Amino acid sequence: MTFENLLQTFVLSSTWSQGLTEDQLAKVGRDMFLKSYAAGATVCPRGAPSVHWLGVVEGMLKVDTVAADGRSTTFAGVSSGAWFGEGAVLKGEARPYAVVAIRDSKVAFLPRDTFQWLIDESHFFSRWVIDQLNARLGHYVEFIEILRFSEANVRVAYCLAELFNPLLFPTTHKLLVLSQEEIGRLSGLSRQNTNKALHELEEAGLLRIQYGAIEVLNLAGLQAYARKS
Image 1: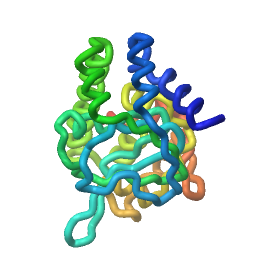
Image 2: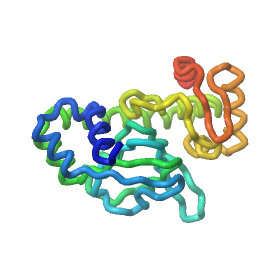
Image 3: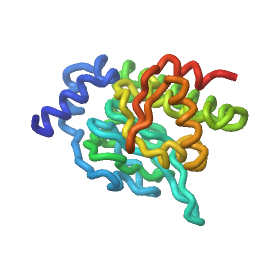
Image 4: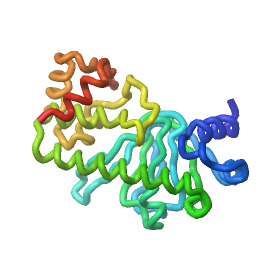
């Protein structure tokens, strides 16, 4: 499949495109472009201008930052089918995070001018963006509560379960190609505590630990576990 066909298929499968007119879709098609990145490559460095809205066509990305003392943390893993970065694009600010490919990935770029044009021209699209921002805010509010009050196993369960949030990550595959180090960064835990938590979840029959990956066996169970008090 050519890049053009791959991009067109991806856009048409995205829920935000379903309420656009033919003319609006045509403009999106003209303005959007696709790039490929090898695992470990930087898609957007921290501090870069937010001049594009991003969609993960294939692969998986991470949104992270590194402190002055060298410590790093991962804010989110972004799986294929997801769009992200709308907050920074709306504000027109420098990205306060870096975007890095966790595995070989193809990423769609929609220019900020086109994104803002859709906000102005399409009630359906602007409503979708509001719902997206609301879902993202709800995720982080709940995550802060879990970070402060929950044990390590619940924190890991929540971070994995949220990768299947239907609004934010609509097409996540049950096999998550994430290292334990990356899961620890998402959960705010050391690798040792992450490993212990993952084995507890495996013993509960919720997932299977593989080399460099986690296979989710019982998504409903994992989601329930993530929200237990």
